[in-house]
Image (cartoon, rainbow, N blue to C red; front, side):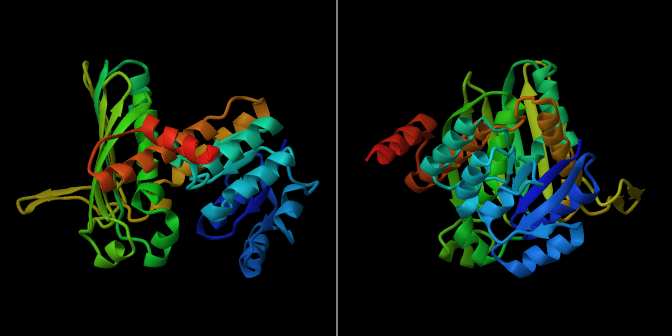
Length: 344
């Protein structure tokens, strides 16, 4: 069986997913695309042999569509998810579902009511190196987890215009690390303490964000996760994960442009790190899609649920509050505040 997709959103990540589904993922195709920018939709449609829908509703309700991919701007994810759920189609949604917890909850209620499958796009869970760390923890190879250390540093900051709409560092960048902390340790986060600074570009500070951060997460059971972030690592895309426990340690290292080294009297040289997330995580995106296909074909559970998406957003909100108020913040505190705001 071939799963025929409607792709919503034809920007950079949408184009990548469209190409993978059309050419690289077994048992998938793209039937329909939609974007508010018609030229972007037309370009992707021509590339993958799809039709262009005139509206979101037309795309998700098309008879040639079996599942929906949501790659639109974050502010439109909820309405797209609700439309796809009401159409009875399995959904893949890029993170985050929304920057508003109440809106996330509204979307997840619609998904649950419709009884459709939902997978959130936390692709780093499928990176073979990172996954090996989580697998080692799960099978008990490192014993009781004491510490998880995550380094996530981009090779360069995004455009200032992007920061103004992305929700800032904790929502557009660290959110992946928040998900990795839960995934690698296999335990929930209960408290967050975050410190941030502007060390890369003063314009980022003027935009109301930080470009450098250190976060400490406390998990149920007492394990601690440290996360360090930077918007600019001059040497490339720096992505490392380590789990340390009572029996040992498991870790994943960076990926270089090629696997080679030169050692001479002058020193030890290795090729540079891969410099872009589409290169570093190419394999993880493909494996992520294989998991979605397996979920739909075999009617299995979601490998990355809506609850996972909500949990990472909740941690991001706690981190921002912690940084602003310079104190530890519990997730329960943030959730209660959200519930009170929703009721009022």
